[in-house]
Length: 82
Length: 144
Image (tube, rainbow over all chains, first blue to last red; front, side, top):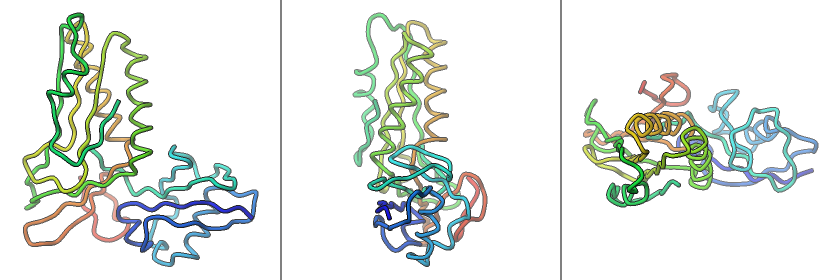
């Protein structure tokens, strides 16, 4: 098992009910596995789209990116800066 | 580099960071909160650590493309009243073509890539998350 930090922002933080937490996933694992676990642990996040934008250690990645113990996965609502 | 601030943007500070006697053309872009749809203010939030890193990547790309140009960026966070600026970009280069082009590149990439979000605050007290894709994803999103 690997412990992965998770971060939620904006609308997704409202759905999750928190801005940061951590989940344990069986390794090897991907960002998609982390998101699946997040949906179990934080039922409000089931309203997040099936394939959300995600960042791994502060860089946007595809959902098949591998994760390891201590990584930080962030779920990003559609970006709207500027 | 990019500065994130919760205060009014300081364009003079940006200009001081990019201008020099070798750079004869300088342009500034300001993005300002609009009043459309009864918007009174926008509450901006960010994944600050990633936003700073992503901005460095964007500015590094601009420097690689236009080595003689200097570009700086400020983004304001928190509640910004309509009529006040949320983003400021200053670009200076030996000639105006490069300054305009580099400035345009940075604002377009910033809007696509910075992990920053807007919540519009309306006159009637309601608030709406902005989704630039226009898709209804979760809750009441509006096209922007």
